[in-house]
Length: 450
Ligand SMILES: O=C[C@H](O)[C@H](O)COP(=O)(O)O
Ligand SMILES: C=C(OP(=O)(O)O)C(=O)O
Ligand SMILES: [Mn+2]
Image 1 (cartoon, helix red, strand yellow):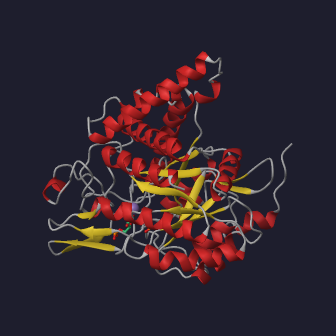
Image 2 (image 1 turned 60 degrees about the vertical axis):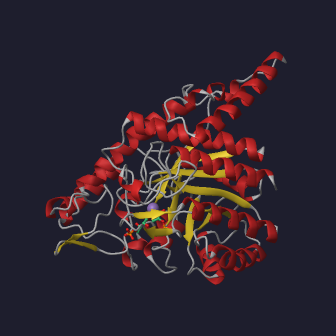
């Protein structure tokens, strides 16, 4: 039996339209936009509300220290790179990291891909100028093209539909991999095949052999491994582009309540978390578990006011605060924030994004980050939570399964000169496969030393 929604609930989903909204494109053709959003609204949801509920329960567990969250994927997915190889390499990397972390933490890892919808980007500037020519900034494949031409940079609503279909195809492959046997823990060695034989690769082989031995031992004892054959893997992205998120928001027939069915988990970015802005209002009406990025300018009062709007009743798992302070600031700024939110009592899951507070420009002109800064922010995040008796609940990482050279450092040293070798990201620099595993091993040690 399906529950009829309260009409005011449905109306409320459009209240954001009369509120201040930032970081949205200016679509040149209003009719074309309406055609695209009407079409989106008629297409099937990408995820099921019940899955979002399951994730909410797992995020709640992470908030209590009974699980650890790993969110990983590109800064900006692109349509061209939604290939089987790229998707498989990203999934394998996340599964490998999750195994390393599970081993370190001896607790479940909640696996979330920053995948199948991470197409919209906020930008520092609305425009980009090259050689005296100024064009609209690239806002992600869902809005415009990366090529520096007036045609490519003009926002095109057809891209909303392409983002939907590419997300559907990506999600379909993710589901096939994670439920069809590929992600079975019995194949823990296989996930390492095909990657470059780096030190992290070798260290992973040792761990995988230990896991294999443990599995063979348990098998000899008569254990049943059905539960190891599939994994829960969730999708997520920044819910930035409201012309996409609104038409994919659907009323759940079980409860009559709205879920944003573009992904299981959506978050509000650092640039769009204004308390009286469109994003906070829209997200406040969703049932999904949601995230909010908190950067160095976020005060404890801001965080509490966000809780009032987004989780007034204090439902566990509903809110994940993703802090991204920067390595140099995390130890100064995070304690005040965490302490006051903890004193409030409404549960929060704390996740560290050690990427976005640590951006630098290399001597050679690339937008990059230092691996040591990334690790230092993670270490600071753990230190602060441990000192306060609160829970470091997880990580959000920009990564790819490929051998790109976008982040400086790592044990296979990438220096300024090497950035040019394979710098492929269209927005922010990502950890490559080796650096991702290396991070997981170091975080595994931090979790073990609890
Ligand atoms: O991923 C996020 C970027 O940091 C954000 O989009 C801003 O990037 P920009 O400063 O290159 O515009
Ligand atoms: C834009 C991003 O982050 P933030 O909102 O924290 O700057 C991002 O996650 O890519
Ligand atoms: Mn980014």
